[in-house]
Image (cartoon, rainbow, N blue to C red):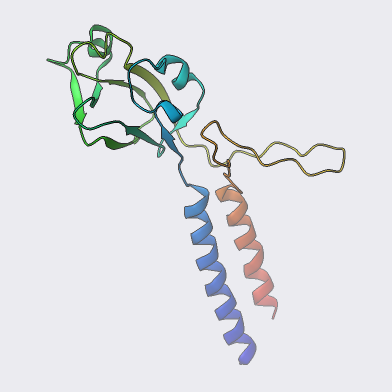
Length: 180
């Protein structure tokens, strides 16, 4: 009887662990728009946006002095014309705007302060479905461990095991408990 209780306890702990890992494995990244230059005039946001691969669930952090700039999510035609009298999908004006990328699609952002969009404060990005089934690159064969991958924001890139890996681990643990 004690073995049965222990088995149930271990199964419960394993379920909690797997659920926690699934949530952690699906963690998104936060990108500061413009990196250390933030959301300001004089930055080439076309070049900045090309450095990253954006996925659903990622967050764009627009940091700027409130009142000097703003962040508008706009349609492509509004992006191209810089005329924000139409085609505005969302307005952000806090100075620390957090925009979650909720769909796989093309996003367009501009600053609507007079002259800023035409001066270069605009960019478009393509957001893809989040891919939590990616495998990390293979370690070098020299015997030394691979250095941690660091993304361009200076954060360690950790996508971890995929959801399928955790489900397999969970599936393997159930029969071992039943054998007890």
